[in-house]
Length: 455
Image 1 (cartoon, rainbow, N blue to C red):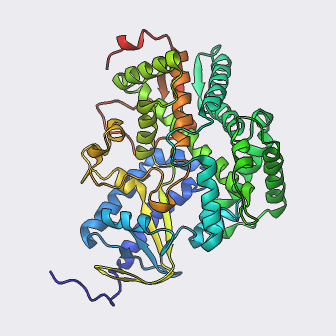
Image 2: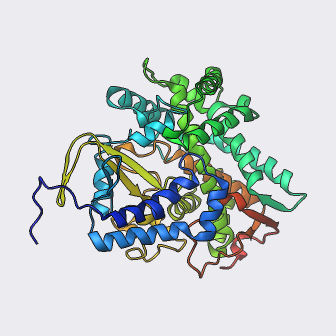
Image 3: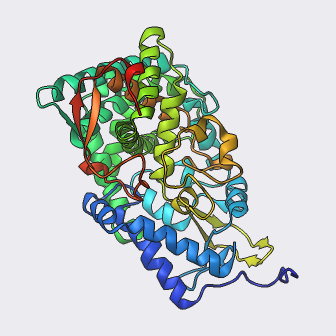
């Protein structure tokens, strides 16, 4: 079939299909909270299976219009959705030019708490801030040089957590997330920030405003107080912390370290969700739990820091329930596609759950398959993007799973976990499209030797 004239516009969805995308994909995604999750909306999405409906809607659009990209009929601006795997790779590989990370929506949201972050910067400022993040987080290293110290922090906080929940015999989300917050503050700033819940509360308040992006006024006073508090912690450059690494990292006048660190705090929040959901997967898949406990036991004996199976479990948690469901870009100039021209200033929407849960192409779409991360050939060339991809890939893509896997190892070494809520997960059944982390509850149980467990 002949290709379209390159000067022609991309295919455009009908009004009905544009409305269907807005109501069945965009609205539920936004309602749950793109910057900080809204518990009530997450619970509703789980009950109503909204994420599963969203994936089916995306599949219907692909069947009708092909691989796209597809322009929507919206009153505000040009908006395209990505439906083809090769187009996902192109958009990510060609970021930030011509597919800028600093989309209008992202600038509006992140300006509430980190307006000088690399994600919403452009040109030389973006390059400097991105380089700072990569150096401080040691983005290319599988294991950060400070991980030995981070492992001690995780061990101490996991022990504290288990001591707190042992009398009741149950571990719930509130207990877990409080412990995770202490780990994050100690890893980034050092022990002096362990109890600074006020910093975390300010971050949550600012992120809640950011959920509304353009629609909420900025609280500039709180934002200034927040950044001053972050900077005060950074100035201590406590030994073993990322703050110490920052103190050694070259900086320019435009680096704005506190704005980069604000994004680290932001990213570590969803990382806690992914870690807790990984524990759900292990608690409901006993054969995988046995493998995980073997690895945890090996870590306890050898103090190894790289835990491939536990890391794969966290990556699989992020595939099944992406904490960044909407990957947003915006074109800086006209771009040419086989189907036509995408105009400059077009918003580009990559819906990660569509590609992660596409059961029309992925045989393991709704199963727990951690081995796809241990053997990437099993993924083929399919775009599984838990940390985005390309030049704008998350610089914490190695650090976050490292800390999460260390936490899982400590918990599994301390106890067995029986999943109480939700009570519907089973290894022989498709996994749900949404998993409400706020309702998670585990019962502590005695465990046999890891090698004695059966699937």
